[in-house]
Image (tube, rainbow, N blue to C red; front, top):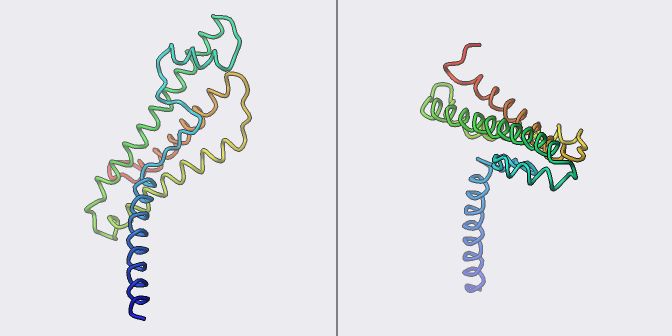
Length: 165
């Protein structure tokens, strides 16, 4: 009987320990999820964009080059808006982390998670109404993410102290 109780206590302790470790891992991931999906915001060099366009089209050199330039431009916009969103979250964290008035410091984790959820929901919504073909399979995911990160950044920036309303 004592052995059974002993093993139940040990197993219970291990279950609690595993739950704590897993929840810490989930929270760390949720703080900065990867929402890039099929987009390629890090492939910004013209030769990379040309290679990507050639992969999905059979166009002549001029059409390929023109499309590649547009893809690189769209990817740069995506990368810029994502960086703006991340910077706005960092500013929000810095401004409110010690701001205990009204419990704003305690609201930070929820606000940051909600910001990511809004961006993800925006992406899911917009991608639900797209069906790109040819080179658009490269541009549409970038445009969707660029606009959704911009939306998220604007929302977060509206909560910063130095913003005029």
